[in-house]
Amino acid sequence: SYTNNLQLMTTLIPGEFFGGEAGSYIPVKFGTQHNASANIIANQLLFSGPFIVGLQAASTYKDLTQKNFDKQEADIKEAVAQSYYSILLAEAGRDAFAKNLQTMEKRLEETRAMYETGFLEETDVDQIQIAVSTLKNEHISASQLVEMSYRFLIYRMGYGIDSNIVITETLEGIIAGLTDELLRQEFNVTEHYDYRIVNEQEKLAYLQVKMNKYEYMPTLSAYLNHQQMAMRNSFDFASTGGDWFPATMLGFNLEVPIFASGMRKAKIGQSKIELEKTKNMKQDLSNALELQVQQARIDFRTSYQRFLNERSNMDLAQKIFDRTSIKYKNGMVSSLEMTIATEQLTGAQTGIISAMVELLNSKLALDKSLGNI
Image: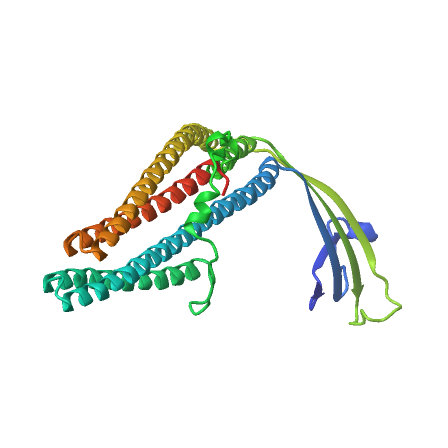
């Protein structure tokens, strides 16, 4: 800092100090016109309860942020897996309709040939034609669903909408790799990301109680002040001949809270209530997660049993369709029976595809409830 004393302050000194009469005063001026100083101040907090708790809270907040990120990542993985299974479902449906359509188009050609030779009536041709047209529409819808399912998966994965991906797995291949290992896996609720998030929230609630209590404690800090001062009657601070006079001070500050009109006590009471609420929420969550795992295991077993039943129905529908096709070629059954067999086969194919997707989704839900994702 710099000060220019345009007029130095005058001080009166008793005259008898200099041999004058008693009661007289002599005016004198002390100081120089130009003063300059340079200060360096260092402060160090030695003890502060809220500051210590604040550091702990910062670390806990970091952990909480990471656990929230882990949960969001798991949710994204689940959504991507569901979209992936939707593609497999759509492709399986499209392929089934394509196979049935190819078979029925052959039946239509055979029916027309038999009609032209007089073995069948025009109604038989119309019946098969309706079945073919229905299968064509279903095949077109299934193909469009495949395209949109791919686009949705690309979107879920964060790729550009014009990107291309190739899926090499099939529903049957994934189902074949399923085991009952998930049903035997032990569930550790403390490893579940939802539980870990609430656990971090409980830590923060405890630290809030601790911080409010520490507000009763004193705060101690130290400071060091070093100063260099120069005094001149002319502005020549840059000259090497002038003196700079040092001054150094070391001190401590102790702040002791005495009275806060009951506010601190109220804050402690409120933070304790919040801590108890968080503890209760964690216990409720623990019970809910245990029930969720039990329900997910039941759903997985049920879905697997439904898949087995639908597979059995599919095998029967395929046998009926094959036998009916042979009989139809030999003129032993009508076109109506052929159409009914086709509809039964299509329904069975749709049923087993739906059962496979339900099974995979139930496995996905069980994986998530166990914290495997």
